[in-house]
Amino acid sequence: MPREFEDTKVIIGAIDGVHVWPVSNHKDLRGRLFKVYTDGPHPSFPENFETFEHFFTESKEGVFRGMHFQGAPHAATKVISIVRGEALDFLLDTRKDSKTFAHVQTQALNQDSPVSIYIPEGVAHGYIALREGTIVSYRQNVAFCESCDGGINGSIVENLLPIPLKETIRSERDLHLKEFASFSYTSKCSQ
Ligand SMILES: [Zn+2]
Image (cartoon, rainbow, N blue to C red; front, side, top):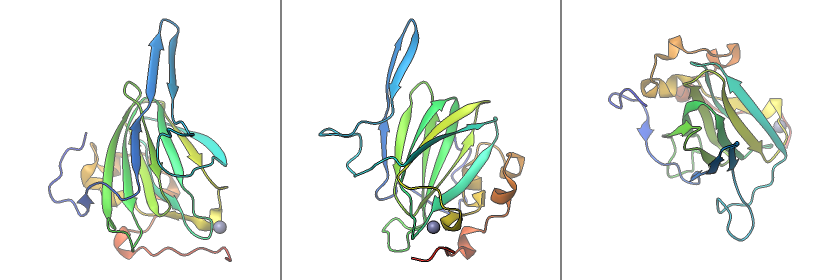
């Protein structure tokens, strides 16, 4: 869990349009069955969502991924779910017209009490894996577009991490993402 909330550079709080719900988790002598979301008349979240692609990330303990989003004209919404292990998840509202702009929402992810998160367009996502082999499922409503792939440096949540950001394992790309304060999104895609 977060080590400290003092001196953070961000506003901690719920982000408008984000939905979090518990995943039904049925255990028996064989193992378990867990349902990450349901559509239909009693949906897990009150938004239209169709999966275009479904992928997983598997992470070593101490890996930090993020903060990532895919912006216009190929903006993506996502549903993420914890499959195995434990992580601390971060959401950052980058929508300037949002009443929760610059808010950060945190969510514990744990295989023993799993949740899914609906992440709307314009909300960046990242997490730190707290257990070896942590697996997170991502459903996305559009194809990946490299030219619309946006990212903000994980330093935005460094005061919320259980270990120092410099001790986390990050990709070269994530290490060089711009700070939120100097970030502005542009896409190389034509509309
Ligand atoms: Zn694009």
